[in-house]
Image 1 (tube, rainbow, N blue to C red):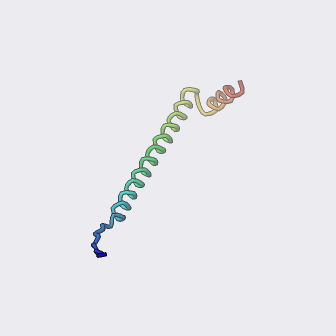
Image 2: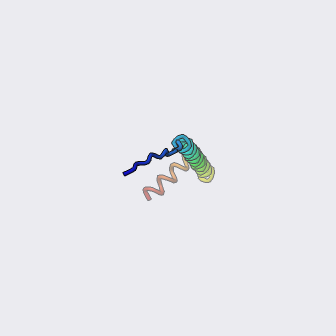
Image 3: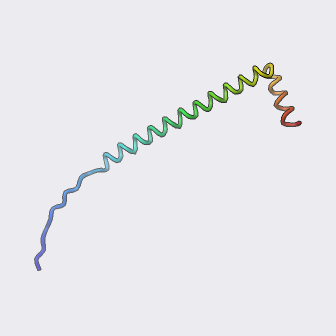
Length: 70
């Protein structure tokens, strides 16, 4: 029985996958940061709009308490 030896060429693809993983992580982190910033700005704008519509912060708190208690 004859045995044959063959040379197998392999390429190191770990480095390219690592860079892709880092890019995906960076983009995901940026999207998460931007969306939480947008939600925070929307909440602050809603609170200010509520204060303006109710007549001030004391009236806003009194109106909220009246809505919760009934």
